[in-house]
Amino acid sequence: MQKSKVYFTNLRTKNGDNLLTKLQRLIKKAGIGEIDFENQYVAIKMHFGEPGNLAFLRPNYAKAVADVVKELGGKPFLTDCNTLYVGGRKNALDHIDSAYGNGFVPYATGCHVIIADGLKGTDEALVPVEGGEYVKEAKIGRAVMDADIFITLTHFKGHEATGFGGTLKNIGMGCGSRAGKMEMHSAGKPHVAQDRCIGCGKCTKICAHGAAVVTDRKASIDHNKCVGCGRCIGVCPQDAVCPASDEANDILNCKIAEYSKAVCQGRPNFHISLVVDVSPYCDCHSENDAPIVPDVGMFASFDPVALDMACVDAVNAQQPISDSLLGEAIEHHHHDHCDHFTAVSPDTNWKSAIEHAVKIGLGSAEYELITVK
Image: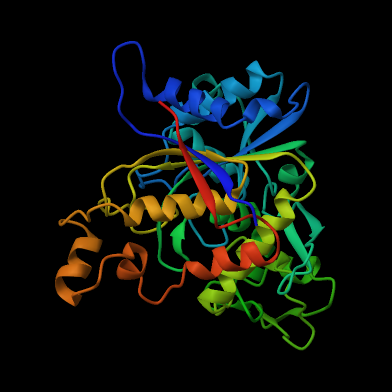
């Protein structure tokens, strides 16, 4: 397969220039203008940050990208899907409150926030996965699929389940509805935490297969009838319906790659990744640990696989920060720190996502790195 082009700029600035203008120059050099944006709806997929976490990308970066889209004639909006777990982004109201609290207000970014899978995380489009081995029909937030053009703006960091959280994670897991997230995380079917259930019966009303029943004011799920759609998770007001979260990490990564293929296939897409504040774990945490390596720079490409591979290589080329989780892992466990992500999360295998994404034709792991001044 031919090498994909990945464009890079460092974080050095001088008088008359700044990081935001460098980001705009980067994405223009990378060819974003080759896309016909005129009067097109443009989803800019990013992570708004769980309340309490400060490693998420600043809203200034989102404005820089949105301004370029508008300059090219497009109609941008910022988007993400609701979370599967309990937290500050589990429904659209809380999610927008969290986004606004972290600075993603229209006055700051120049565009609106739309939560792609709706109020309760159940507004989804069923999208066939071309060449899918684990997922035949991905459950994607509807607003993501309604967009004419898809752009990602990713904070590249470590991740406790997938090894790293990059563009594929931002697309695949990030664009899955709550049921889609359950499908990626789980090899099984949801269950009810009896101590939290109030017997309201909302799960029984939403279940099309009669799997959810309420007995003695407590719900339960018959796994012989359950098809694993996850809609009961979205409607439960007490978060009593819980996913199994029992999928092997390698399979999780493969499913993320297939969900990414579903989102990107058949329409223009473009991807940006910022390797800054490289925290060891996901921005979904309500806290962030110290960065594991120094800030590297900003990357952009039409190929999300090559982009992730370039960011992995860039991080692994950095000297670990001693007072970090990576520094401690190397000191205490004598890790060979040529692979920082495995050193931090040894039970993960980040390569499985890259390899599967290449296998299903999403992109190439081979890239040419082009530096933009």
